[in-house]
Image (cartoon, rainbow, N blue to C red; front, side, top):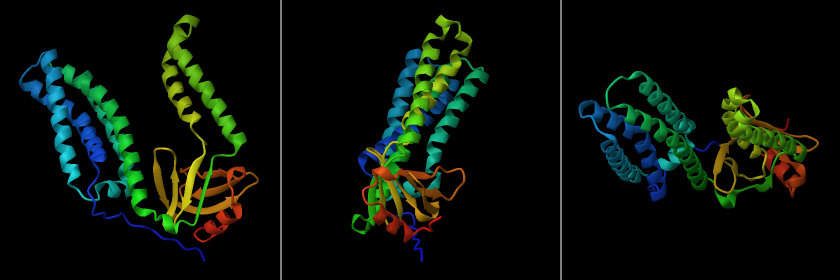
Length: 285
């Protein structure tokens, strides 16, 4: 019999901590402030100095207001971390970047282009801030839900070493090649391809981090996976089964588009204990 427990979004009575509320306030301010200043400049044209002061004042005011508002919402961090829509925070910021860019190219109003260009830059920062907010929300949700006394098994493992090495070598090639193309393409006759350097640099950097060892904990609610700065709880209905291959224990995700959890067997201290704990909640494929 496989026991599956789904934990609803936690209705925590605790108010969010100051750091979370501040990051939430900054996120909103980065995305909204340029639009507010743009609206003001349509009515009252501002010079460069006025634009700078207006943006600074608006960002500060909105950050403070939203920080106070979020700080008065008990359980908001945990409920956000439990939601599947939390990942949309980064998407919204990306759409704002595109929106400000389209507006900057299409709006022909004297004195407003500075606010829209600033909106592009601030929205890019907003993407990073939104992703940080996602990580913070998920970490706080996992902290609130996972009961350390009820944990059935713990282990730390990454992808099997041969696979990990291949991915890292490929990532390093993209990373170094992208950086060289971006900064040195003109000197070797590849200036027309220098635009490929940026995407290759970013993708290569992301691949360098794939497959690194993560810490895992099995809880009655699901599987918690964490690294040094981020914890995330995957409830049991996010998985369909587990299997054991020659070199890895694989937790198979329910969605075909979701990557499986592959844990190198050589890095797992007590494999039998882990398999017994997994069998309590998932079928073995």
